[in-house]
Length: 190
Image 1: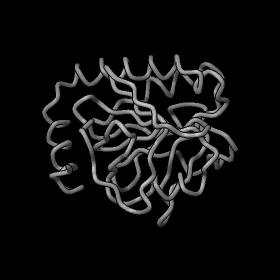
Image 2: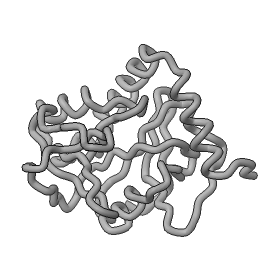
Image 3: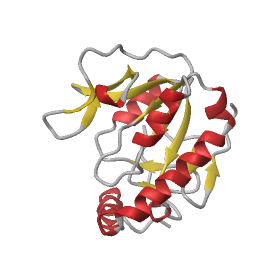
Image 4: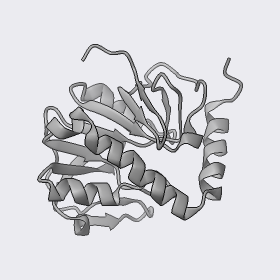
């Protein structure tokens, strides 16, 4: 039985992330992305769509650099009005900080158009059924409802996983959730 609202989950996780030791977050991020690089979904993917970490999220920059070095097409998100779109980058130098302090691709990058990318998804709280609570704006849910052919993998620290998180109509469950010590896979017909 769910005892907290989405907003309470968000507050709890933000507090936990703020109290976590930076060295622990860096170590756990490396473990999480080592697991992802071993997944068949990563090995066969030619395109990787992945957020750029911010504010103690699971750290992605080393992963992004390695994927680029391995020859993957890498795209990172930019918010434009009420939508999120991914743009290809071939270097971390193509990531800038926007006026809101968020990392995003430079303006002159090409919009990603892969039909079947592996999408690495952030969030604040998750449960073993791969349900997700994001930051409350719905960008990933809208993107994933429109782009249904992509494989989805959420990344989180163990302290972000709860027995159950509330879901509303329109929330998208992911196919995988990877933490530093656990893997969850939602039963889906792939």
